[in-house]
Image (cartoon, rainbow, N blue to C red):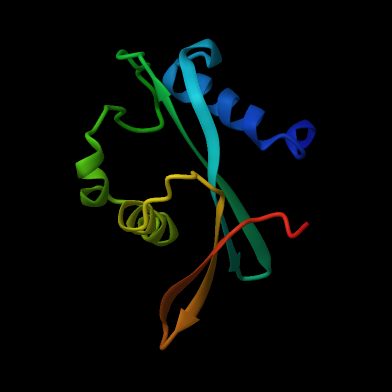
Length: 125
């Protein structure tokens, strides 16, 4: 996130998608914040906002970010991600939420291994 985007993670997401894939915001539909992942790395607290959306765009930019290509949803768990993203993908595929609520995952440790603690983000009023 750029300094001027700190209170607007969706616009950060749209900007990054455009920069890294060439897909313009006009071609993105149903973009929704689905996960917030929080972890501590040394003295830094890292917070990731994960959005899910749809597009009818097929062609992607060639980029220095890596090889971009579309995959089927049933291939999600076969790809390599960071450990927290891998756990998020497992949660997403095994815990479908028809309401598409925001899920917060807090990374912790149990017996020396990553343990994600999941909660639904809800208004308490």
